Length: 447
Image (cartoon, rainbow, N blue to C red; front, side, top):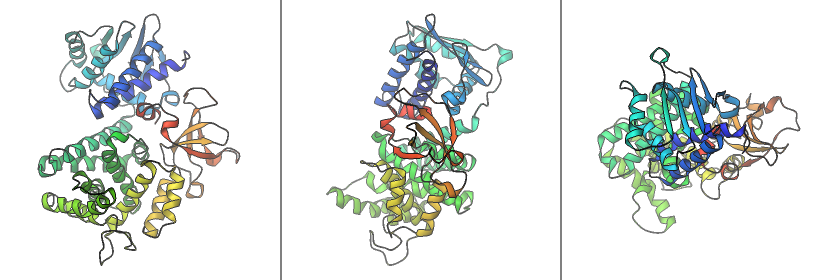
């Protein structure tokens, strides 16, 4: 790895590892892979025996060099600078003697320290000492330097809301959580948090929905369907309360898949709508918005032309028709073999079972290439979609950030507005994350 890329890789790995341990916990295989990548990045970035990560107010420095958003991503820089500031940390020194177990212990202790209590940096250092951690030194800010760090606070809150939504939904689906009113209320509050984040920064939420982690497929699918349904609801100018009810319905649309009764895959697919509706009607209807969730669970495979299942003698509910579009799009772009976003939308537009007006609204809102998706340009460059098109007339020409040129490694740099670029510079094809990123950690860090 070149000298200039090593600090960027360290920032990306640190950000991704903190987020993956938050999401999956310390013992998950995804976390273990992230820890190993962070360990390698620390040693690659070490100068004179150590790699130094420091927060200087609103800036983040590695080995004394200020890192730039166009190189590392504003979300990663903002998150690390903010978390350093909340803990009263000026600098963390990762020395060469630190082993992979020491790096793991640091990440775990960093996340566990209570930032609402006094002297979090001192308590973090004490926790590392108690764990016998070697080669990782935490240097605290002087009291007069300790100020709230607000760098990219909005993007950070979006990430937190998405992760809270995943955790709350996991709790509901495990160990009869549907019968636990406290867990259901937490899930509803988490959906409201996603709604609020969506209203504040729609593109950041949509970007998170592009990350595919197949070992928790149902969790991610359900939350992504929630995100896509909210996109339609917002374009319909739904109220905050209506969006919350829509998001809850989308989150629980596949609840029937969590308790299969046996049978072939096709039989289970046809049974899960009625089963999910029954579970919600039996356990969840005392909470506001759960009745619409039961309706959407029952009807989301019916189709607006009623060609699907189960058979009904009335037009599907408006919420069910929205959830059907969101569900189909996420399924087509994530279930193996995944379709590219343009191919998925083309397939949906060719079908007669989606509400045509809602589908058109969805396509115009999402764009042919959603924020966070990966593309190859006609010039051979690999890029990530960083913003929506300037107008609906340029749905195939969004804003992108170059990630890779030629055969070299990942090297984020130039931002391009393809609607203002020459006609020869366009998107040639979509790329699957696995062809560009080694793991979810790299994808998160590139957003």
